[in-house]
Image (cartoon, rainbow, N blue to C red; front, side, top):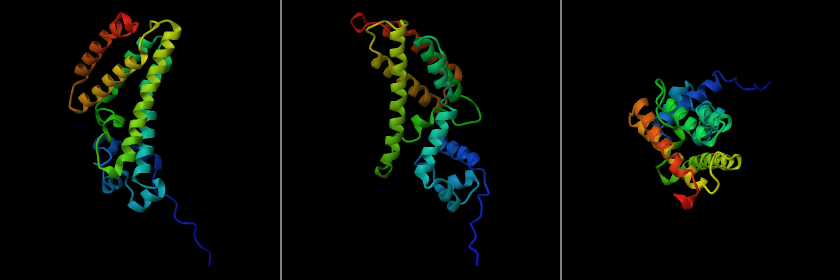
Length: 206
């Protein structure tokens, strides 16, 4: 008797992953149960495990999708803007538009989804911390490029400058989740950019 090859998947994997991303983004890793995921994705638990492996593996794929889709504003700012200052401002303002956009969860998934939790989920927290460090490193490299190209003064502490604007970005995410309006968030960016001339100069001159 011939053994069947199994039933093909009866769902759109990409669409299911996007729905899982939205649930994780809204509720966080530990706040999202398997039943939340299967309900949102329109599949049962065996199909979820067959397609994605486990909850953590699904979460990592969801983070990758988030980075690709929602991280587009940051990626464009880092690559397209002609000066480091304009790159930083475009990064902040572009993310504000995303954080406060209607029809999707507010704030940043990578900042909000797993800052605290049980010891059993330490790998997930470490994974997101690594994502955040990578973003910080990318911003510092853009500032270092500004030093080489002459639009950031030589001797500027680019590590501190990158850390400052990364902290602003992460704070914007939390403010957005707490209900701050787009206008309030953009006002924060105004303040942060007003500090540029003080911060982007040789350390001894500060």
